[in-house]
Image 1 (cartoon, rainbow, N blue to C red):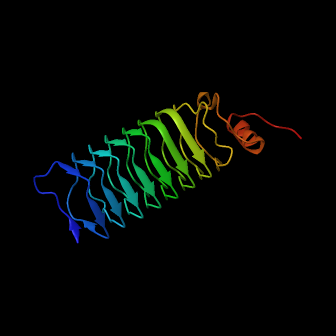
Image 2 (image 1 turned 90 degrees about the horizontal axis):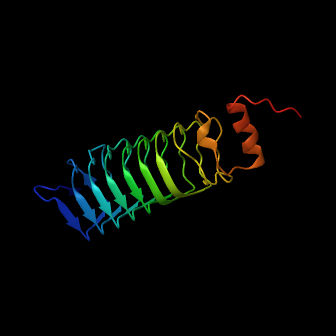
Image 3 (image 1 turned 30 degrees about the vertical axis):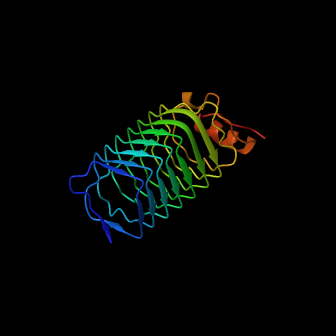
Length: 193
């Protein structure tokens, strides 16, 4: 099975299961759709609108999702390696047990989102506007947060070793004592025992 769109621009309340995308999905609106075990084969998905959608065990690796709008969307155990989701609007988006290594969320708005048990190593989150992000047991090793305020975000249960930032982003961040020592090193502070 495969997903094709023809001249359709809006797709409502449709379930796709174990299919492969064989076309560009740019500038489409998906509302109330469920995608289970769908492979998007690196096809374009940019300038899309996703509302009340669920992606379960899908492969969106290296997919272009730039400048899209995601509202009340769930990604469950998806492969998001290399996903380009820059300059997106994300509201009430759940990422659960996803592999989002090397993904790009730079320039995005992230509002009331929840990220649980994800691999986000070396992802880029530069110049993001974040309000109401819950992070739990995620790995951000080597991730970039340049010019992104991390105020009121609790990273204490997550791995943040080797993250890249310039300093002001740390104001109001919530971390464990161990993480605070690592962050001090990034800022050039020497901690003596």
